[in-house]
Amino acid sequence: MLTLCVLFDRPIEGAEGRLDERAVAAAAGEIPTAEAVARHRAHVRLLGGEGAEREQLLRLRESALPWLERPEAIAVFTGRAVTLAAEAVVRLRRPVPAVELWVAVRRFHLADAAGCFLDTLGMAEFGLPDLECYAGEAAEDTAAWLRNLSLYLVQEGAPIRSGDTLDGPDEQAWCAEEDRATVDPARRVIRFAPMALHP
Figure (cartoon, rainbow, N blue to C red):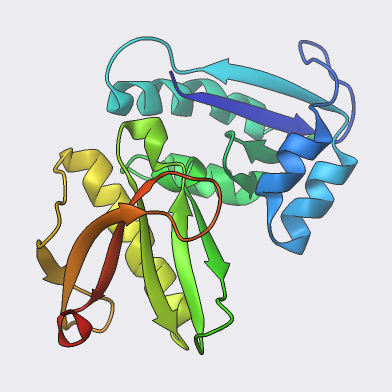
């Protein structure tokens, strides 16, 4: 079942106290979201209920927006990702499901490789493996590609298997490979690489 917590900068009626800051901080990532987590004083936890993930996403959109539009709202926490309230409102108001509120895109480096790598964290909420790829110096374009691919996979429910190919962030053919995650937490991932680099 999908869950969503709205964080507030002060106690308000109907809300509970602070969340465990260590658990939320691990998902906060960038400085603005980390600051929001540090200064939150109350939260409301909303449940997606029964049914398919798409139904739960729509239900959570309806229940979260009234809380997020309050001036005290500062962020949303979904277990894997923290999003500032204003950005969450924009995403929830779009006609497509706000999958990125549950799926974080992370950047990491390896000692023996130039450039950076990206992965997602949270696709398991939708019964799907996380995604991983090498971004090199094109982190922003590759992150946008991963977000779009995550949304597509959740909406279509179409699994990707080893050997499947698709257009990558550089509009060249990229190949998928099922594997274990390069960085923690341990989990299964679909790793993507340009066909030109695939054995």
